[in-house]
Image (cartoon, rainbow, N blue to C red):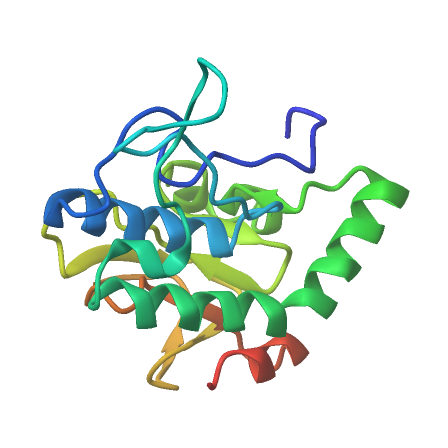
Length: 194
């Protein structure tokens, strides 16, 4: 909406973060999940412990997907594979952003301007017209409230359950995934099954 369709966050935060800390591991997993559905996905930052280099500069510690523990690794690796399956869709969205200026990541009201409730949702977004993402932002949360815009039916990307639009419900959000829904009938839905 700001005119910058390709942007990112430094997944995990740029400065600090201890890959061996369980609380930080959870934060990293949730941030990585969010990043999977961002226009640019970038795991980047200066982690602890810092290691000396051949000069007086320091370099950050381990920051690869396998650096965050045995529970986090398969989750992060699965989201990397999902991101790769989404590549054709992201390419379409990027080309459309170039041609039309439509953002890749969109507020709900962008796709559903006639849905009054979509204008008040500020913690979910659309990735293009066909994927709805509900990030998990609270430590320890394993569910969250989700609003599905009207004028569409939505398929849960994990369970395949179809939900009527215009509804709010408590969606499951185990650490393995955040709530993500595909617009019923959208071709991108094929990217979700692993």
